[in-house]
Length: 128
Figure 1 (cartoon, rainbow, N blue to C red):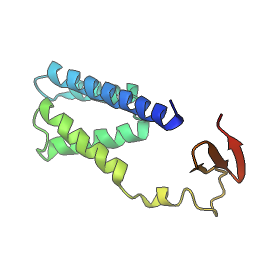
Figure 2 (spheres, rainbow, N blue to C red):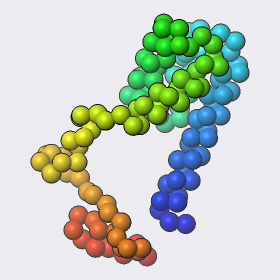
Figure 3 (tube, rainbow, N blue to C red):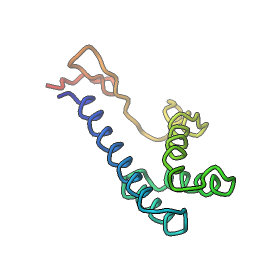
């Protein structure tokens, strides 16, 4: 199994785990209260979503509740799916400049060449 297949498999397991945890949370609450929101936040953190993303998602959920977009725990899953999709597809000006050559932070760009070779910072190394 190659690197990208392993990565894809790992990400798939993470997604399935997060989805299962959110579904379990949804069925365990009849109303959205502070305890439900605390459990949702804990679920996101423990699922390795990251603190910044968790904060963004929780702020969006609270805003969605205030606007009436989320009325019950069942509304959380589609709302979160939409918000996560928006986060993953948004074009953030800060992030667009992260890989520019004039950035002072060091970085390595990996580029797939043919089938077995990786070009790493101008050096060619074999993956076998």
